[in-house]
Length: 131
Ligand code: FES
Image (tube, rainbow, N blue to C red):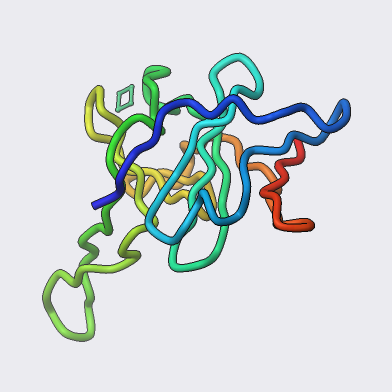
């Protein structure tokens, strides 16, 4: 289960770049919401890889990133049973529990529905988001 953090104040670096936080403030399994854009952007550290998605659910516009993060269960035809996969990569919207893959922004249940993703990287020990 993901431990949520309050909205991060961060700092604008340029018109397109935003410093979210120091790298050590976003360890694996954590996320912060950067005040970027109209709804904010959730920046996730999933097993050491950073991802960023719009804090806007593609279902009805709920605050997607304020929900917890889990894995999901998908049917495995070969094994003939459901398997738990994508652990730590699935944000579950707190309004109606839609599941969104933070790596792609795509809904688990309906690949036609998605939220925007952003480039995010570490530079000189800072987590930098590009919009
Ligand atoms: S608004 Fe997110 S699941 Fe409905």
